[in-house]
Length: 141
Image (cartoon, rainbow, N blue to C red; front, top):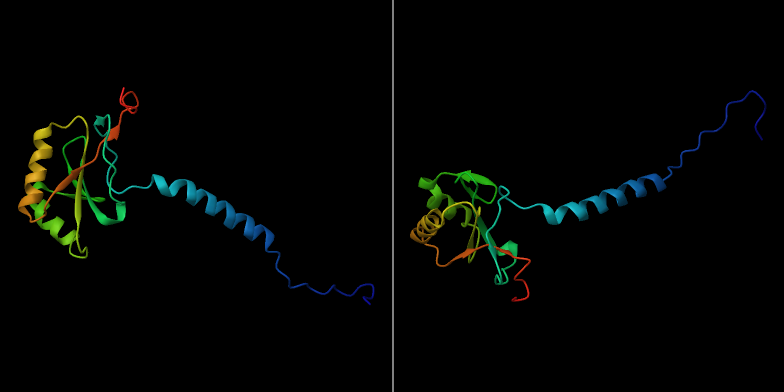
């Protein structure tokens, strides 16, 4: 029994409830933000009525042509002169790399075609193009 004037015994038990609350909040924030994280710059893709389904993102290398005509491999900017060799370096770890181009809708198709030719000259067969589904023609109407 504690005598008056004696200091109380320190309890060394950690209350984990606030820790669990913080971890759950961080988990929810991560789950909401993670799908919005994409490599490369943000571009306005051209619209199409029925784009084909794309391969899973893990099996492809994304080449982006931004609004100003800059080239990117995933999230790294590259020059047009080094696009082929930088792509080969990026694909060195991939067994069967799929190259996909996303270009800003305001860029002329000639720039996209030039990037496609450079990619094919670098030794990659078949280049995919990304587009966004239009809301008006989504049901074929």
